[in-house]
Structure formats: C-alpha cells, structure tokens
Length: 119
Length: 285
Image 1 (tube, rainbow over the protein chains, first blue to last red):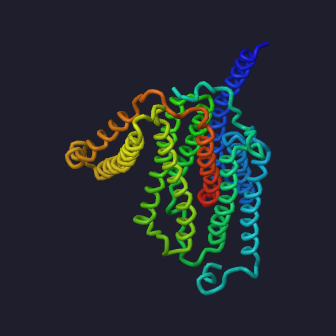
Image 2 (image 1 turned 60 degrees about the vertical axis):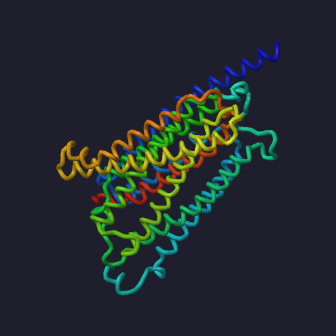
C-alpha cells in the first residue's frame, strides 16, 4: 500500500477520534450539570451532617476527576502529566488537611473574649 | 484557511518526539504551573475553612448574604465555558480555525458572565450586607479566596481575547507591522465593548429595578447604548474573513495550554462551590 493511502487512513482515523471526543465532551458537560443539580438537592434533604458533607465531597471529586481526565486530556496524555499534577494536588490537599487537623485540635482552639462568647 | 492546513491529521497532539519526556514543553510547563497553583488554592481554602469552623463573636451569617441561585447559575456558566474551551481545542486540533474562533468567543462570553456575576455578588455584599475585606475575618478569607479565583478567571478571559485576535494574523506579512496595529485596535474594540456593554446592561437593570420605562432608559443612556452597538459593529468588522491566516493545527498546543489553564479555573470552582457556599446551607435533621 502506498504512503499516501496510509496517510489518508491515518487522517480518517484521527478525524473519527476527534468526532468521538466531541460527543464525549458534550455528554460530560451534561453529566457535570446534572451532578451540580444533585449537589443543590442534597443540601436541602434533612440528613446527618457527616453524610451530606461526604456526599458533597464525593460528587465534587467525581466532577474534578472528570474534568481533569477528559476535558484536560489527561486520559490521552502521557502518565507523567498525571503524576506531575497529582504531586501538586497531594501537597495542596495535604496542606489543607494538616491545617484543618492542627486547628481542630483542642490545644489549637482560638482563645480570647471574642471566641469565648461564641463557645 | 490556515497555512498549516496541509499538515492536518499528521500532528500527534499527545506526543512530541523532540523532547526528552515526549511531552510538548508548553504543556509540561502548564501542568507544573497548575500543580503549584493547587498548593496556592489549597492554602486559601484551608484558611477560609479554619475561620468558618472557629468564627469570632459577631461574625455575619453567610446565609443572610449568599444567593444560592446566583452562585448556582455562575457554576453552570463556568462548566459550560469549560465545554466550549474543550471544543475549541478539539476544533484547532483538526485545523478548523472558524470553529475555534466561535468556541473561543463563546468561552469569553461565558467567562465575562461569570465575572459579571461575581462583581454583582461582591457589590451586593459590600453595599447591602456591609461585608468588607477588613471588617470581619469571614470577609477577609471569603474575598481573598473568591477574589483570587476571580482574578484567575479575568486573566483567563484576557488570554482568550488575545488568542482570539491572534487567530486573525494573516499569512501574508508583507504589510509588516500593520497586523499588529490592527490587532491592537481589535483588542481595544473588545475591551471597550466589554466595559461600555457592562455599563449599559447595569444601567438597564437599575432602570428596571427603579421602575423606569425603556423611554427613560434610552433618553438617559443613549450614548452608552449607541457606543455599545458601534463597538459590536467594530468587532464584527475586525472579525470579517481576512484571507489566509497564519494560525492552524500547528498552533493547537498554544490553544491547549490556554485550555488547561481555563479548565483549572473551573476545577478550582468545583471545590469552592460546595466548600464555601453549599456547606452553609446544610439542613440538620
């Protein structure tokens, strides 16, 4: 087979892949909109606080991962991009978690007249 | 169409054999930058949460200030802007400049709507709610976090506008610097249309809120309304087909890098929306 024929086959294949991505992107946007609607519904349903927070965090994680892997092409890019981004994400998330734990500890509770009134 | 159209279908957008990592350098730089930005926003979100968990006496109740309808609308707008950005990248990877321009314009408009919503929200909080950057810890952490995100959105919109104008660079550069001067005028028309258009729209909202009719509105804001129409006309004139352009599939990495930044702005809001807004509305049984 000639090189020209190979090139046209490659081009048709790429074009098909791009068309496929178009539908994936539109479907993902619809799913993200539905998840956002679910987040809104969840806060008005009387449930234990821990359960509402868990559901909200779970839905946010789903949205977050969907955007980075599909809209941001991590699914199709080299794994190094994913590793690089998740290093930053782990450091940022770890800092957030550590600060919340530190300030949640009893010895770290803020003191002073302003805070005692709240307690 | 593009001078690069001939190469359509032959560029591997996920692999660059000329770099040691196999990843285009621009993309690698953007992922490294976004990773560092994760740490930046992680600290800001942690700061806000800590002060929300330990509010000093006299802290305002966010539920008295927030408008969940407005914020939900802004969230939806930002999600849809991410879709348009992804479609812009998809289009330029096929060398389709016309569709790329349309998708970039849509992303710009959605970004501006989000920013308009944030300006309205901040204005409402300061003037009606009395919440400023310095009169409460809640105000300080809230404005710092959401303001930093808004600044990222504004930078993204500016980048999008510059990229949109870049798509008009002609292949034939015999005119020398003419294209740069035209690009600068294009940018000024864009900036003018946004500022005058927002002023005109806000004036219409105020006229409606105060019970004035359209006749009152047009008699008092005729110049700004006419200016908006003229600037939109200028934008259409600048956007007319200039012939072959020096923009195509080979520029896909530039659009993709910008897209990564824009999607990051979206994922930060995906975290801010529940953490800062929705958690305040939890109904305890």
